[in-house]
Image 1 (cartoon, one colour):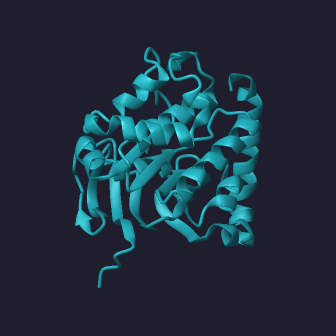
Image 2: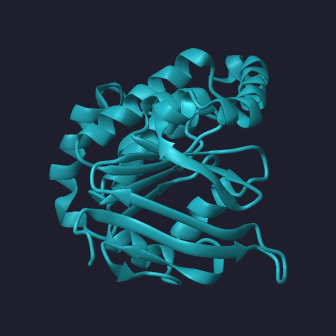
Length: 255
């Protein structure tokens, strides 16, 4: 019996970029309406590949992806966007030569008649962008560009928003702002699936989380339970926290 609350379901995904080489080796994920799902794990675990597979950017060799019960495996990114899937990549996520307002307009190219209504909602959600709507996105800080990318993805009023390492390259202060913003978006009713390098912070704010290792599910459960699980702490959180701290110290000035 299908659960009407189930928004995204990925069943035993096998996927990769090169022929004969799989990055995902049987990943499974479920996201229910209104949930904030975290995906963590060591480098090379397949976290971003899983997100890209959900968005049609990676060839799925086995398994299936369903959106509200509909099999959407193999659909193009445009088709997935039209069905209610939003995606914010880690890098190159804004049109730098366009203004903030023009970036948001690009996010609604499939439904231009709704622009005035949707952009008003984005200004309410991201007031700092509203004040600078005519500023070119390329002149913004890393954290501000991340907000523009999120707002553009939200213009289509998606059922689910996929975020690929939203805090990467940001200072600790900007990381906190990004996590707060992510939770605020989630509280508006948008289901969010987030791949995140800052594992501890991710587990603190997410409803449930998946720990990937070598392209497979290693652990799953409520975020705060995983954050306090001795095995997860020993095997993953220690090294992940060290990696995040090193990356933050190297990139703090960039935000």
